[in-house]
Length: 301
Image 1 (cartoon, rainbow, N blue to C red):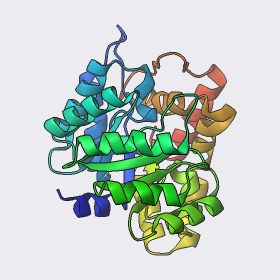
Image 2: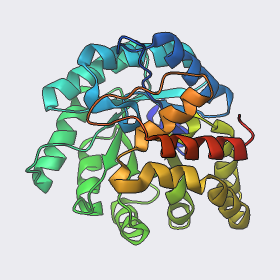
Image 3: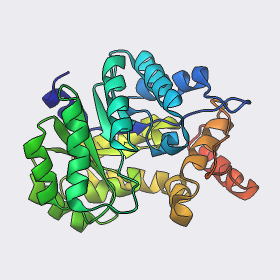
């Protein structure tokens, strides 16, 4: 898959996989493969293991590598795998090189977690990773409004394998400006705050969106994408309202239960255990009940 091919593929639902754990706390490989396969069967064409919904920061390097292997094997040639990488530069580079060897089509670089990030340093961080894997497509993950379009354009000038941006700042006006300053047609712009953000961001230039819901009900995410692609915003907003309760549960309390809500839904569907790793925690009984009500409303239980 060429850079252009992956850039085009990103204009879709980008499913961020959960990482299921077994009763001993290890990665449940069988459940992982089944969830990924079900997601792709539901119409998702780009899959990202080791994203935040996958509890990236709670996984060991060996576990992130295994997640990539499982995902690549599960999707075959039916979808593109864009693996999450991050931490320090050396660790991110090694993870990117592994993803390349394993058959991923690209990497998504997590927002640096260093407490002191300068804009020059932000460019240098991503440039070092992209330059280390010049044959692999790179997607940026922007979570701060401090990163403007000019700095993204500077990075793309230096690294032609940077093909897309997952933009996760909750401000569509800021997104519209950043995308145009960087080059709206130069990159694929992905709404990085899932279904709730998708209509607003599509209205000002996004052509794809990320989804954790796609683990649970991929058909709903794909229906929303199709409505947005067709410019049918009335239909899109009906779907937005349909999934709103689920996504608001995930977003509550600064997204404290973002992953836990998805895993609870999967547990109620019998697809994996509800276990998450600290600093996340399983849902309260009241929130578990709320998830069940939503699944019933979608006719999944």
